Length: 534
Image (tube, helix red, strand yellow):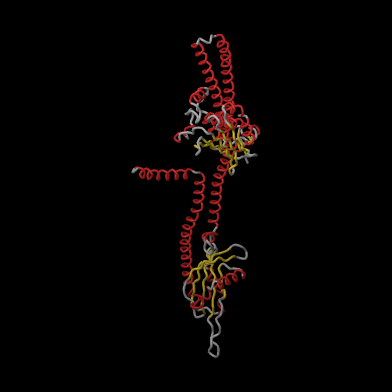
């Protein structure tokens, strides 16, 4: 007992390891894991690339800011002595520093003059003075409105100090856009000047300056490619999964004996249901396997029938030949009579062996290729129960039955007859004289339950599961039966220990289960559960 906790402690990690191994090998788990990876990877990469892009933006804007500052310092001597009459000439000076890649705009906010009373008028707005290259009035007005909306000009006009970076995109009326990168103030006696530097180069236009990072063409193109790749991979896996599910559905229908079209029609073919070219070879192999199993089952049934016929004929001839010999031999010749009796008993045993060998071959054939259809189990059990009248009268037994009507299962009618026959004959063989064999067929949920009771000696609890094993047979005289009568009864019956084994194999093949238990009042109870047909 002290070793039990240690054994349980060792089993727990093994079960956990087996469960993890199953999860890892499961296609559904891998598909889920792959989906999570496809979701997590772009999130992580986007965060890293966004940080790198922000650093790249800072470098570009700092460079633009430095460039605007240098240009402003170069223009400052020319702006110191400017008055209103000299403003138009500033376009020429500004053109020396601007080009198609670096665009410059010069704004000015004149100093407010004092009135006669000494009070100052309200602050004047910024005015565009010059642009290099030149821009249309619509583009200049749009840019000025943007600077006003962002509060850049208001902040600049209050102090006229502080070179600052910008990150604004301005569309042109003729199409295209440029990036406002920096604004540099120059303070003179005339007023506050503002040099706006903008760029229309590919480095600035294709960057994320002035817009969300996800809206950049590079990110959108990468996202489209990634989504297409993820969708393709998931579609491939999902297609394989659906294909395998179709294979599984067809396999269950074949094993379950459901009504499927003929192989020639293609609907019952794995190859016809396949949609993945790479699985075509597998589907064809499955079709060949099903065809081979069906042929093997048919061969088994024919061989069982042929072998039974081949053995039954000489057995019948020997049995017929023994009768004249028994009549010809004198009754006082005990030795010869005993020899003939032994021959007859051996013939009975051999006849039973041939019958059971045929039943075993047919049971094996039913497992290979079960021929199933809707069977009214209520009618079948009622008909078979009524067919035991003669046998019950011979054994001085009684039959009590309760059969619910309309219980239909999907199985083979011949195999169900064999199952009921084995259960009832097993109960009859163990029942004492004047005993009762009970047969009950009821519905339990979505299943039907067949219960066969006898009033025999029951079974040793240690052998309740073993009675379903192949070739296991343990028989004792029936309760209440005289020992000489019981011995004669057992000697006259051939029991090979395969009847209940055949019952379990066939019941489990039909998706059901069978169990044995001793009744509290004495005797054995056999319970068969089968799923009802849809």
